[in-house]
Amino acid sequence: MNRGAVVNFFTASLTSILLFCISSIFASLGLWVSVIAQSFVAVVWLFLAFFSLRNVRDAQFPDKSLFFVARDFLGVWIMGSAFLVSNGARRLLRRS
Image 1 (cartoon, rainbow, N blue to C red):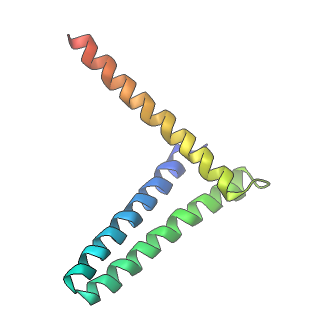
Image 2: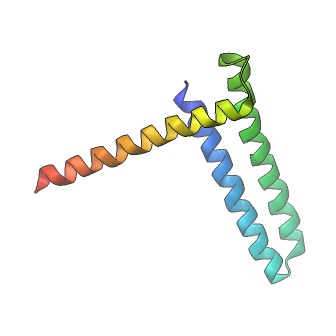
């Protein structure tokens, strides 16, 4: 599993979610041109996340579903996050 692809997928997904949140804030303020623009950009980021998953599936897991690849990405992300947290905790405990 390519870590860059996992980072690309989660960056694109989270950026898309944040842009939809910003779009809803603009909608509550009545800034409709900004709502349309932010929603368009969010959809582009969402497509980037989808195509990132699809490209990895086609290259590494041709007989698996997109859900399998997304679950595998989530597993890699959880293991990486757990490693970072444990490494940070180990450094904090070593200082004491």
